[in-house]
Image (cartoon, rainbow, N blue to C red; front, top):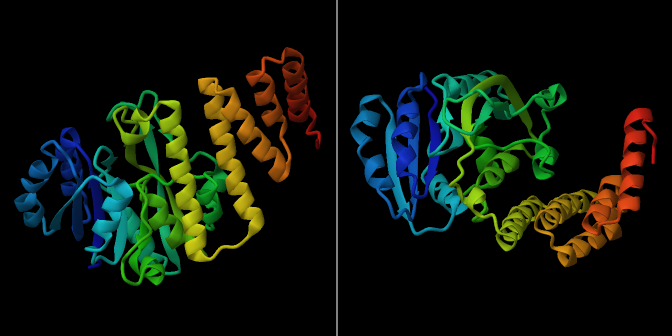
Length: 328
């Protein structure tokens, strides 16, 4: 049987550790290597994880417990990856939930499709565990489901990379990380594993919700809500993307400019939310200098500068484009 290495990164997640291990123990696929990395928690996360050693062993699984000083999920995943010995690799956030068939179905897909390096699944994004009343599926667009070349979409933020919703073939990952040392960043771990594995390789998709991504209000991302912290956060996500391009030696200037535009617009919209006009103008000029401005960019400018006439003009032109498919 092929072993699946599941890297679980945890920082002060004691409220979720028991549920996390329960869903791993309930997986129908049992050849699992659980690599739990405590990222400098100040609560009882590590102790609770340790208490599951016997149960994990009795299920025929393996548990590796690791500790490090607080450096962020990206560094925690990198530390875990150094200890991974499985034929397949996946990451799983301690506060999310995998359905019992999740690992089995991803493992079966890669086992039956030897020319694929990656498989992803659908899932539910929820505000509260098991409350599907307002759940949203990760992927609803049919073309996104059928796309087997997901590298560009991952890098441009056009498709998701939730931990728990993907599995990669270890041999595809070690092709780029022969010493099992991945690129590191405080701002997440999934692109460094998923995007690198998907580069010039096929990615499959299982159109079935096999996990719940819980939109935890106490997560690192959701607690960084000041303007400066959000800009720092987005800059971190942007930097790791360019680090990946440099690592893979992707020198396509046009593609790099598209990535710049994506993050200029994200930061520009953040400026609108916080009414930061000076910073908004900086990002607005950057977009203008790269590739010209879209109608939505101009509308944002009108909103930010309280220009009612220009705002009405932009809204009218956007409606015309939608109604008549004008090529402006």
